[in-house]
Image (cartoon, rainbow, N blue to C red; front, side):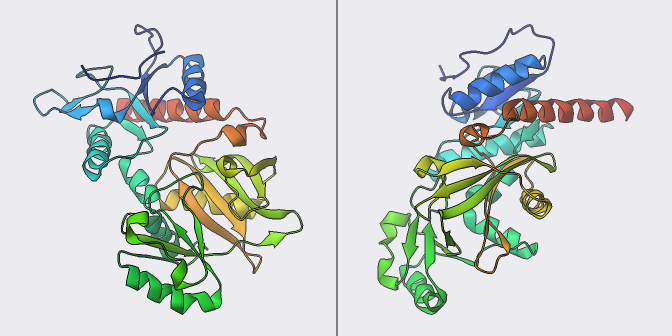
Length: 317
């Protein structure tokens, strides 16, 4: 029998919509979202995409964990674990299928694909004219070495996992000899121009959380190291984002096609705002510590409102 993490679903006869929270374990975020949806009269169930599957003989073509052949009214993807190429392809395929079945999915597979692949994010941001560090992605170590030799005269580069989060696996590259062997980077070298600036209090950047075309929370992150992620020791600090920073975060979120996103921004050496990354499955425990806004409730309210608006449009057709 497939494993389901549907351990604290609300009353199954609740009259409100059923929202599937895609998670990998019942963490603080899942608990906060479940409470938020319940406060809005929605039934929240937690599922892992590992427990779902394609079943073409069913009415929907899917088997959705905890619901069988039935489908949720909406899906909110909070987290999705890594796995083999085949496993990740299947999980994304399930999200694609849900969208084809007209189920509201936040964020849908397209947005997730554009964000988990950092090179695609860099490509889309650059094409849209949004300031972001120059980036390169190649499979050959020799090609990566050629890039470093050519570009290091302008300063160091940052080697990042193509698929990665929370500041894990970052490495500053000053010479071609700093590049690791291909097996360390799963055969792909994603390099980004280093644009960090050290101030009197160390390094600082900003995380803005966007939902439905507006910034709902923001924080500064300070660290003695150039890696400022809270999970790597960065200190979250309350901040009021200005108009330019907010507009940049909203534009970056729209470019990747996300309904909500965490956008990492900093001021470069030239004083310009620069988008480092866009995260389609952002965590916000650190951000919640320094903002009075109830983030889970805002996200839940936005999704329920979008679901209601969609139902209203359908009723008038």
